[in-house]
Amino acid sequence: MECIFSVDVEDWFHILDIPSAPKISEWDSLPSHVEKNFRKLLDIFSEKDVQVTCFFLGWVAQRFPHLVREAAGRGHEIASHGYSHKLIYRMTEQEFFQDAVKSKAIIEEITGRPVSGYRCSGFSVVEDTDWFFDGLMEAGYGYDSSVFPAPRGHGGMKSGRCAPYLVAGGSRRLVEFPITITRVFGRPLCLFGGGYLRFFPYSLIKKTALNVLREGRPVIFYIHPREIEPNHPRLPMSVRRRFKSYVGLKKTRGKIMRILDDFEVTTFERFIAKYRLLGS
Image 1 (cartoon, one colour):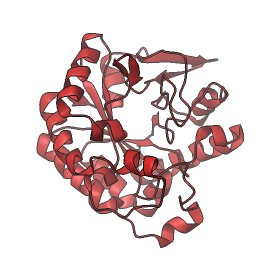
Image 2 (cartoon, helix red, strand yellow):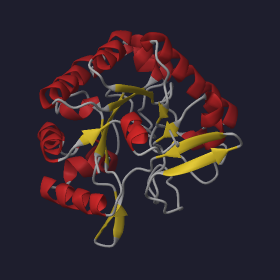
Image 3 (cartoon, rainbow, N blue to C red):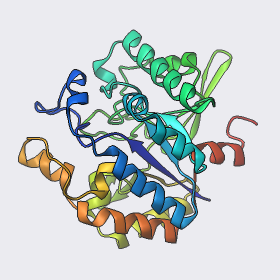
C-alpha cells in the first residue's frame, strides 16, 4: 500500500492559537516566504519524480495564483485548506461553510479543475462540530483529511477510527482520511508531520510508518513550506509553543528526501481511485 504525501501551503505567520498571530487584515503587510519555500518543495518532488497533494490556503492561492498553476502543471493534486486559517471549533456552521466554499471557488477559478479535497487548519474538528461533514459535502467536496483521531492541543476526535472511512449524508458521500497515528510507549502519536516529524529520529519514523502499512492503513505525511527554511521569521510565543513550532527545522529537508526514497507516495485523489473508496 502506498503512503500519501501532502503539503499544507501556508506562510510562516500562519501559526494558530497564539496571541501574536497576525489578523488576516495584516497578512498582506508581512514579508511572505511561501513562494520560495514552496518552489523548493516542488523541485524536491520533481527530483524524486513523485506527485503529492497540495492543500492551498485560499488566501495564499488568491495572492499567488501562479504557484497553484505551477503545482498543477507539475502534476500535483490541488486541494483546499480553507481560506482564513481559523480553527473549526471557533467558527459557526455558516462561517465554516462560506469559508470552505470561498477557498474552493478561488482555487477552481485558477486551475480550471474541480477541487475534491479539504483539510482544515490545525486538524481542529471536534465532536461538537457535528455539522462539519455535512457542510463539506454541501460545499461539493469529495474527501477530507482533517480528523485527528486522538486528543490534542487543537481538539481531536475520540472516535479512534484510524483507517480511511466513508461518511454518508443523504445522497452524498465523503471519504475521511484521519491523520495517521500510532502508539509509541503506549501513547497515540502522529510522527508523520509537524513537530513530531521534525523532533523524532528518522529511524523511529520509518519503523512506525512500516508498522502502519502492515496494518493495512496508508501513512499520511504532511509538511508546511516554512519547515524547510530554518531561518524564517519567528512570531513571539511561549517557550513551549516555540519548541513545538520551530524544533528540528534544519532536519526537515533531509527527512523529506529520505521519506521519498524509502516509501512509495501518491496523492489522495489517486489513492481514492485506485482503491475505489467512492465506489468508482
